[in-house]
Structure formats: structure tokens, C-alpha cells
Length: 524
Ligand code: TNX
Image 1 (spheres, rainbow, N blue to C red):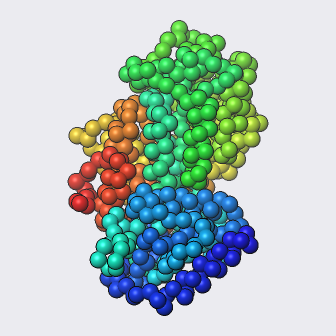
Image 2: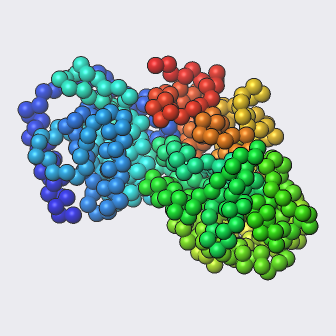
Image 3: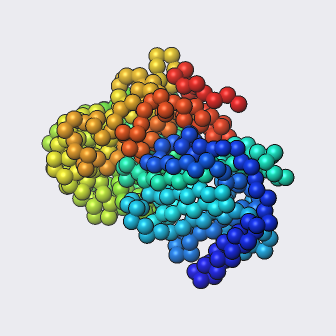
């Protein structure tokens, strides 16, 4: 800590003394407020000059929290990927450093949210203030977005990446900003999920919900019930070979997400959507029919037996093992479309499973149907199709996650000729996905009841990263903004221009996207 302060002191002094010797660079006039940032920050003030990111730039971080140093290293690695520059983090600077990026832990009262940050960009320094490492991490995403794709090689004798100067004060609208990936209908590998997480991080999402089980497949190793993956993991929609995550792989995903300040929410969908589990262990089945593997796309035909004690001891093991590997506060129990579960059994089931989830130290989330049961106010309902259930849950004190199928389902087709996806909830062109307000979507739902927003991506029609990305991008980028930015600052015309400017990022990351004609995509 003291060592770090001395280093910083030396760096600042050196910076100050080097100024005299340094040639003045004649930067072209810049306008920070015109930068195509997504999500749009709360407040941006331009000062018209520029910070020239170059090989002589150094990064320092507060010594008060080692997580801040990790944020600095993340920034340095991403600067390297984008520009090729090798920028040290908290390294002593024998050689002269011209410019400083300082990631600072601050207790400023203006930082009213753990994810808030302030970015002060001057000619020779960038100061990023945040209360927590999560806030600093969100702030460096803004900085990444401000670094141009190409350097300016004519301003001085070496390449500079020109960053506009000014001030950004920013923080999120919602504490929960997520997307869901259905890895059950089709399996997605650890590498594919990590690629999705990278994009989520860039646009300041903080939750990835993994739909880990459904009729067509069980995707997470449970040591006490090995057939779940041996049998239930071997199928997927269309008859492919399926797959599953070992516990080590799941923990690796959780850690990868945590490094990006993203929480994994695991979902085991029940009592319906459970054919794969019941094929593995037929005693679980409650629909009275002979059970066999299912690789079609119908829903609502399977159920656990809600009146059997052994079903609950099975669930105690499953939830216990997953909860133990999941540092985040949530466990999602699904609860949707249990069409062959008697209503009284359904209610009994949800209330019993809620207790098991709580016993393992987690907060229960379920799709909006769970509001039919007498759930505790600590549990969370995820609105997808029935506002009345969301209202009921909110009246009982529960928080609500807003994921209306008609607006936020990434698996809805864009239009009648776009590839992949379904359209049971309608088509969702890119503008329709953007032009709605999650705070007012459910009439009568108080803002304070809204935990946040989530965009689910169901995978009946997609089976690899390229198809996944075709549905997710560019709509996912709009949901990032709806989750973060104050709604009164948002308008489609401004957004579509900033969206067009995302092409270099999407190309650099090799992210496929649907090139809707509604946007004048940036050509390079
Ligand atoms: C409804 S939304 C489902 C999923 C399907 C999806 C397809 C929800 C909670 N259940 O089982 O995959 O529609 O769009």
C-alpha cells in the first residue's frame, strides 16, 4: 500500500516534470459527448482536447483493494489486444512515462451505487474513480469503447490512439442486467459461453443466467446422481450428441464470469421441462406415462412427481451441489409451463423447493408462474408472459425481473424472412426490441419492485456460436442500454447511430450479427 503510493507519487512527479520537456501535440478537436458509447452514460462533459494512448502510458491502481489491480490488468490486456501496446500495471517506471491511467478506489458520495464510476480524461492523465472493483470494471468498459480501432501516426513520431478528453459520471439504472442462455435445448461449449460472457462484459451486463436443464437435456454434472449427465446429457433438439459441463468446467465458467464482475444464475427447470431428468431416473416422473428421450421442441408434457418424498431428497442433493459451486446469491427453479402438473401439486412443489433453495443459502428465482404459490418476499419472479402474476408477486413484496417475450426474447425472429428463431410471441425487429421501457412495461408495477431486466436466448433453433450471435446481436446491445441508462435519455435515432458504430468491435471479436436495414452499419 505504502509502496504503491510511493510509486504513484513518483509517476505523477515524473509526469509533471516531463511535461516541460515534452513537445505539445496538436490534437484535432474532439467531442467526448459524440462518442458512440453503449450503454449511454448518465452525464458526459466534453473538454475538446485529447489523451494520446501510446507506449509510454502506464496504469496504476489503488493499493487498498487487490481487486482493483485485477481491473487494471484486464484493461492492460485488452489495450494490448486492440492496439498491440504493452502497458504495465503498477510497475515501477524507470523509463519515462508520459501519460498515466489511474484506477482509484474512492469514497466520494457522488458514487451512489457500487457499480457507479467517474472518468476524468485529461491530456496527460485518465482518472477512474469507483467505490468497488465492480464499478471500476464497468468504467474501464467505457474506456475500452473510447479507444479507437486505429492509431493516428501523424501527430508525433510514434503511433497514438486518440481518446477525447472530458468527464463522464455514470452508474446503472438496475442492479440486475442479464441475459439467459439455453444450453439445454442445444449444448454450448465452455468456449462458446465464454465468448458470450466477453460480449456481456463489454456492454456492462452483470448477470448470465444458464438454463441448465430441460426436456431435451441435462447439462450439469451432479456427483451424487451421475446418470443425469450420463443419460440425460446425451441428447439435444434434433438428435445431436448433447453434452454437459463437469463440475470443474462449471466452476471455471463461474470464475471467468466473476473476473468480469458477472454473476452466474444457474437454473434447473422444474417441475415441468424435466423429461431428461426423468429419463435418467424414472422414479422422478409424475406424468404417468412411459418415459423416453425427447429431441423435439414441444413444451409442457413432462413433470416431476410432486407428492413423492424421494423427489425432494433428490432435489436437495442437486440444489446443494450446484449451490455449493455458485457464489452468486440466486438459484433459479424455472417453474414455467408445467401444463401436466395439477395446480395444487404445482403450488406444493414450488413452496417445498423454495425451502430447499433457502436451506442452501440462495434466493429463489422462478418464471412468473411461481407467483401462484405462496412464495416468500425474498424470492423473485421473472416476468415472461403474465403481468398479473408479476403484479401478484410484487404485492407480496417480491422483486421482479422484466423479460417480456414480446420485447426481450432474443429467440424471436427479427422478421418473417430472418433466419433462425421462433415467432410465437411475434417478430422483434431491432427497433421494437429497443423502443420500450422496462420501468413502465407492466402497468401498475412500482419501479421499486423491479430488480432489473433480462434477455433470454432459447436455443431450439440454434446450435453454435454463429447462430447464437445472429439472434443475440445486435438486439442484446439494446437490452444493455435499457438496463443501464436512464430511460429519459434514450431515443432510437441516437441509439441507431451509436449501434452502427459497434461494427469494428463486433468484427474484431468475430461476432456474427443480423445486419438489419434499420441501421446504417458503419462500413470500413
Ligand atoms: C417458452 S419462456 C419457454 C421456453 C421456450 C421458449 C421459446 C419460458 C419460461 N418457457 O421453454 O424455449 O418459450 O421461445
